[in-house]
Length: 113
Image (spheres, rainbow, N blue to C red):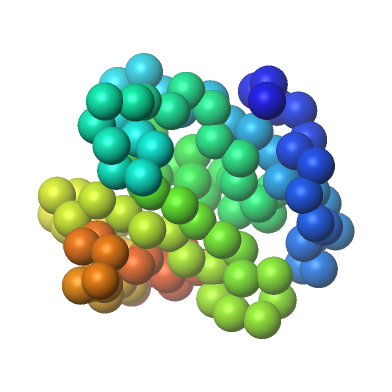
């Protein structure tokens, strides 16, 4: 997997694009299955939400996974629970997922834009 290269996954029905590969900023520790011992350097995301994920990262938000919803659901991102203050400040709608011990963030809807 290389940065910027189209990742060979199913096409999104919203944007008609395949996933793209983003370089995780060096200041963020995004890990595999929440294992702090193995840091991800590259992440594949749906092309239509890639800019929003980069925006979250630029604000220091640690993400665990995301999906654009593929026209069936709202786009969401799983976010580290320690990032709640940033999510509030940025005005995102979110809820706590107790099974995963993180926030589910609706990345399409910001309350205080």
